[in-house]
Amino acid sequence: MSIKFRKLLLATVLLGCLTYASANDEKKSYSLDDPATNIEAFIRMRGDTAAKDSLMHWNGSVFAVFKDEAPKRIFGFEGFNVSRMQKQADGSWRMLTREYAIYRDPATNAILKTWPNPYSKALNVVFHVQNDPVNQTFGRKSPEGKTFPMPFIVQGPDVRMGFDALLAYPNPIDVKKYPDVVGSKIYSGSEHFGFFGKLADFSNTDLTSVPVQISWSRTSPWLPWMKMGKRPGSLMFSAWGRKVESFDDIAADFKAHIEKAAPEYFTAPTEWTQPNATTWTEYRKQVLEAKK
Image (cartoon, rainbow, N blue to C red; front, top):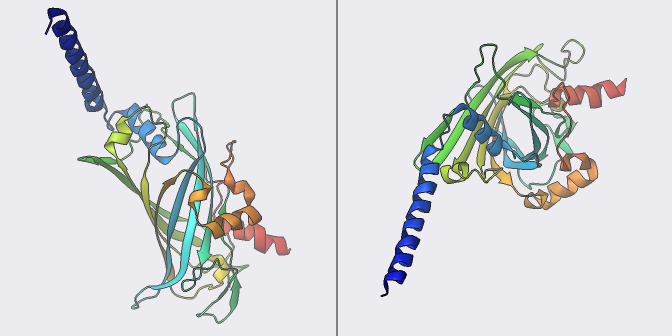
């Protein structure tokens, strides 16, 4: 082996070691505890920092809950949220989204149009979830200059995060006007979110969108279209899903339903608007107030 070749081989090996060390150092220096990294990691997980549409899809079930009884599965449940992230001048992020979800027959899995209510014996017209907008801001600083860190947990190669939304606010539907639709002047419920990803994806800062899987559960009063009024009991939702590439990754009948019923849901909003929509506000507007 010539001296010149030995020197070339040694230089190649050293360059490879330096590159490996640099990559390793970069991974080691990536910390989800860093405030700037923390909020950007959440935005990459929840959507895309390149201001592209991002699609989260889930499947699950809805259960009727009565005191002293085992919960009963009454609906299949499938939905999606399409989002667009917009970075603000102060470093915070606006998340612009809309979401649609359908109720399915628990036996046949068909998308429901009506539901023979086994509790009231009425035939209810199903009102699918159609919330537009569902907008939020993340990373905004307090008057003291602090931000709320997202509660990431790193365990080996895995990253997970969860949070709970515990809710109680004036019911958007007037119980005095519509006692058959809602049972209380206060909406009381909760939502519980889980996100699961890989540290290697988060630390790869070339990725503007990080692959994640999700879990979601919810407790709520009876849905207004069920017309259960003050009947004792409540609902429990349980679902799981992931970030998907396109609407081709959702069920074909669901995609066809959106094409016909609400094609605007194929894209995320591009402008910030308020207030946010819920089934209660949309049912009031589209059904109750539309009858006047």
